[in-house]
Amino acid sequence: MAERSPATRRFLGVVLALVFAFLYIPIGVLVALSFNEGGMPTVWSGFSLKWYGSLATNGQILSAALNTLIVALVSTVIATALGTLLAIGVEIRRRKGKALEALIFAPMIIPDIVLAIALLSFFSMLNVTMGLHTIVLAHVVFNIAFVCAVVRARLKSFDWSVVEASTDLGAPALTTFRRITLPMIAPAVIAGALLAFTLSVDEFIIAFFTAGAGRASTTLPMQIYAMIRFGVTPELNALATLVIAVSVTALALSQRINRTIAP
Amino acid sequence: MTSERVLLGIEAVTKRFGSVTAVDAVSLDIRENEFFALLGPSGCGKTTLLRMLAGFETPNAGRILLDGRDISAVPPNRRPVNLMFQSYALFPHMSVRANIAYGLEMERLPSAEIRARTDAIMATTQLSAMADRRPDQLSGGQRQRVALARALVKRPRLLLLDEPLGALDKKLRGAMQLELKRLQHEVGITFIMVTHDQEEALVMADRIAVLRNGHLLQCGTPNEIYERPADRFVADFIGVTNFIAGRAAPGGVAASGGLLVRGARPEALADGADAWAAVRPERLALFPGPEADNRIAGTVETTAYHGLDLQVHVRTALATAPLLVRVTAEQAERRPVAPGDTVEVGWSAADTRIFAKD
Image 1 (cartoon, rainbow over the protein chains, first blue to last red):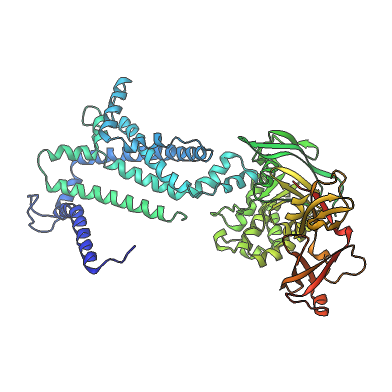
Image 2: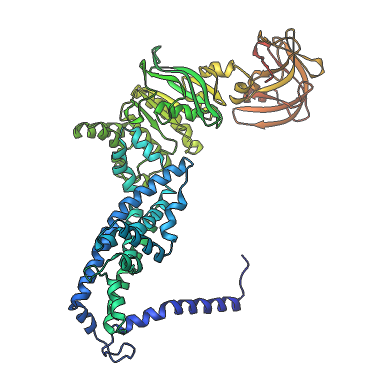
């Protein structure tokens, strides 16, 4: 690549700064305003943590947060188990020259709204009573694809001869999986789980469609949506800040673990 | 050392992958306590054959008998056979000790016995000092020894080694060749090694099978393979050989210009058929004595000093390529030669091998 002139480099630097500003200024403002003392969501009047305090006493928000936690944890556990097995199965088939890749990535590519409607019709067709359990199942559907993608990336560089070595040394298939394969791909499995958890925590559309009637299965994003119809309150800013904190932590952790995976 | 008892019988084993026949009706008997080498260029089927012995591939036809029992259908984890992988395939998340003990744990042995046997094999393979290290903290040679120890500790009836020295640098390889031989002698286990390195096979093996395109070309001791190769391919693959093209004629091969190269002809070869006369460079003499019944005048083209010997290329009327003559350093000192010198090259008819042109 040719060396860029200083002027070009400066220009590109400005473009980069603008892009980052565009991406992060709204989020920065939101976080800053969550510490705003006054009730006006857009006018700064002094530092305070009182909105975080009022969050902690808001029953609706707390129950929504609990629902979100349940949905995210349960769907993550299921999707991680299934997604990991799927990744291994697909990789073994691929090595034998039989691919079915496109089918696996479909839930990642299909627009959320389409998936949401499809799942809603599916559940209604089966006459399933909707609630947290249907949200969990719906989240499992797309989370499998993400876990599978992360684990497969690791399996691409996996040395399968260790599996053969384990078999050769007398281990049955399940022992090999438990003692060799799983420990070796564990970082990718954990990274996939963290990604699934993050996606589930702030997923709105699919949860909204598959939650069914009533307040009992409201998740945090749905609660925020309901609150925002009465205007943006500082309390909402504080809640959003907490959601961001959880997501960013999980994502950062996931990437960090993924980076420790062998080259 | 090697007994006459047959440990492993390979009977007309064939393996096909789609339309490709990787191993074609190969039959071999491997004896108890033998160090056996499967030798051939890449793609000759030697690794596929080894993987069938380990149980990772199932033959399409033929039988594999271990101690007289057909094991063709026995899964790899139930065979008293262990494989040392070319990439070593060490478990990266386990220490050296855990890697070695793994196979014994699979046999559900008492932990005291596992510990004792692991300690013993680590002492034999000089790994005791690094028992707690992970594979990525070891050098290539140490990793190789862990892979070997991990397979040997199970005391298999048969140890399979897939290019065991392939990943080592040249100097270490020489040392490990002798080390492997010593170990095989010490543990008294039958070894079957796959290699593409003919020198390695000659140095290490009691017997060698040469394979090409899935076919077994020749099986014999290193001396038999080197001195009496079955065909032109084996002669060319093992060591260095001078080839002289011509036609079969009474008493030998008529080379270009009607010069007769004397030697014993295989009976199947008819007069006038295309043929090769082959002779090893160390069998050629630059200043032949009266016993040399093949003689040809030539001009020295190049000389190359190799320490132990001097390799001299001599241009002659016999062949388009110059003849390679290996002169011992001692001989070269007595009668020095230089490029441009006119010399006579001679050898005995008994040292000529004659092959049909394939």
